[in-house]
Image (tube, rainbow, N blue to C red):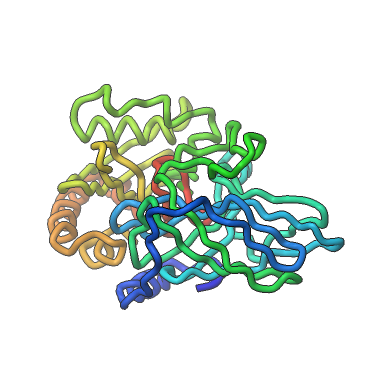
Length: 334
């Protein structure tokens, strides 16, 4: 459960399967003060929070401010969580006009006399392979490991699933600007919507009737541009789970969306073959009975596509896990 390297898609299923083993329980304190400061050496941690997650969400995003009062640079090397397979440090960045998530394999430098804030608009910690739902009002301890300061145990407050800041954060540290995702759910289905000026708030799902229209409108608002139209097909819904296929120019893949308690759809996972078939759906956290129904409908619907269209759905060659708020991503670069 450490900050680690990007996984090959073939290995991801194995790792996800391990999350079905018994998880370690953690404290869910519902009447608590904001997270206290944590200190070690010259490192001080403030404003640490994690976004609450929807049921069966495979990842959680964690954010904080790290201040180095020492005379020498330090480096955040890794982290561990009690209820996750591993924790990775990600950076959201623009690359060739595309918003993407990059794994920081060498950690993060905390300059002497300076501060670094990890927030939903850029740098963040991603807890992969959650074995429990993160419920608003609780806390989750993470152990952060620094090159000089050593290990620091930090109690992260679990805030709302769309929280952008911690109550302890000064206004100057609040994320802002075009790079912010509404989730920043870690690129493309191949392109991050903020990369080409879309704001997820620009499409109000409540203004249209029907789940298909809401899902299609959401995805097009997030990812479509004038010169790169997005095709959503097939679109399959069972209860509060949807599996869709998407095609954009010569790219394509599949996505899993979940309907929240307000009846709005949110992107959860983007994948290629990782969302094809009953077994893979179960490994991605879909209940077996729902997975069986969706897989049968998927096989029939994809068989009716043109061979070229159907082949594009297998092209997305990594599993990309989105944070709870649609549009924000928490995944590896494609």
